Image (cartoon, rainbow, N blue to C red; front, top):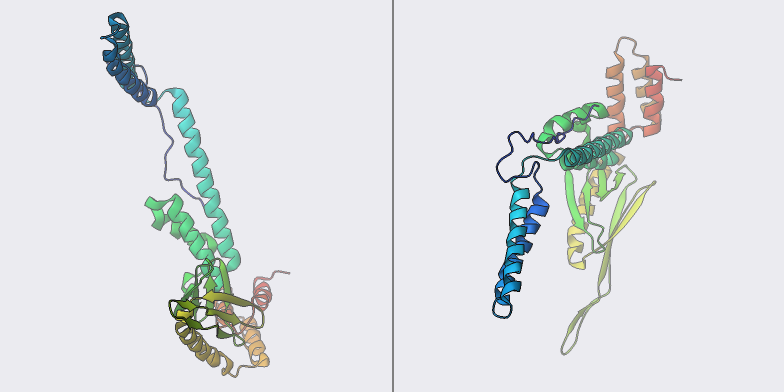
Length: 309
């Protein structure tokens, strides 16, 4: 993917005809500073007239001279060649950082593929493009998606609910097909289960009420687990979310598809000589999306279709 840069290199404005009482190039920083310092110096010199007229006059002349010098610098036009080159180098460096950051995010999305990890990678890519190319987001995002070769339609899943944490880890998002907590993502499968734990009690005394409760939610499968401390008052919401997820997991467990059935489906796809490779890869991707085959099984079948040894 070729990433275009939104900011353009700065060039110095040609001075053209020098205006009367103007520097060749603008020096706004120095100009403003001299005007302010000179003005303050001139005003303060009026207090010297009562004690020393000569000192007051000298101070007033010096202050007005500083103001005049500042105005002279402010009336200059354009950037000096050195300043323009510094700005050009800074913008070129910013463009390089933007292109490198987007390329890294594209590579991460390509490596993650579909699933919860792909959702996190796409969010990171989206945020990177918005940071560096806010005015050209649609075009840059389109190029990035094409370069990643990831079908974004496979990165969608119904959201069951969200569970805020108490320890600054953000919000756990529980989808039907994956669970996401910040940069951490796990895919839901038939072995996924969850529970909500609440301990402690509320103690009410004569003059005070102490809430000593703690609560946490645990989600786990055969290959991963994630635990989150939550507000005890949100425990019932968390239980509802876990119950809905458990209901969906039961549909995965009741599919009745055996390992032999899955292998037969893979063999049928591979042996269909009249089907283009792209369609075979799409069918395999659908099986992986439905959690019927693992990433390793997908890559092995993909290698056979593409003739990779």
